[in-house]
Length: 96
Image (tube, rainbow, N blue to C red; front, side):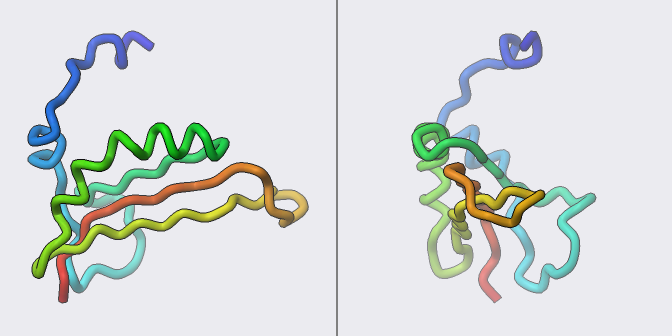
């Protein structure tokens, strides 16, 4: 919690300036790379509330970059059955 408490609130432009887009020819594992990707998991209400903070990233959508958004219901690892939780993945990618 100390780490979070020590962070300043960033402006929309500071958030956008910190993004490293995924190259158009990118393939394979995402680790380790400097590519910016966000994953939010939890109850639908939490995913929606936390995802709303990422709205400034929509400004990247244009002829050269796209905003990749993937929202999916999560599975229980043991049973493979769908849970009531969701996972939201957001990244910025160069168009190829």
